[in-house]
Image (cartoon, rainbow, N blue to C red; front, side, top):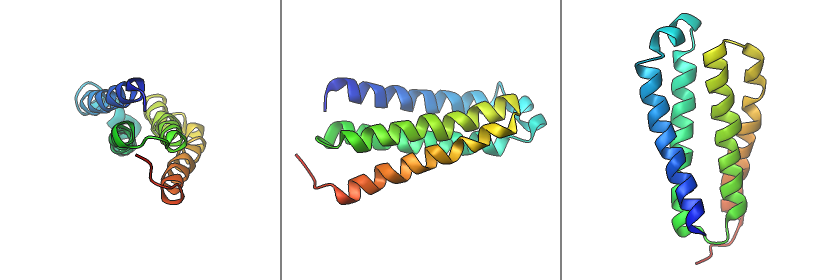
Amino acid sequence: MPVAFFRVAAALCLLAVGFGAFGAHALKTTLENHGMLDVWNKAVLYHFLHALALVVLALYGAGNRIAYFLIAGGIVFFSGSLYLMALTNVKWLGGITPIGGLCFLAGWFWLIISPPRA
């Protein structure tokens, strides 16, 4: 895959670490007051794990662009909706989260059924 895919994946890893630190320090009181610290932490966990998967796909997943984009979409919809919900305390944003979960599942399923490529 092109270098841009690797850089996007690395940037997503950087953001996950930054969001984790920001949530643990600068936003901790706000998140606790909203009862959303666990939601934020779940968003960071899934964001970071899947960003690492994107790094691996960028390095070794030639031909698996569909999985890459599905997993990247999962980060945006799953973690993104949870970040927004935790910050705003707007509960209906949680209705977007399953779209991201489906993207994650579809991306992993794509890797199961697609033939490995060099």
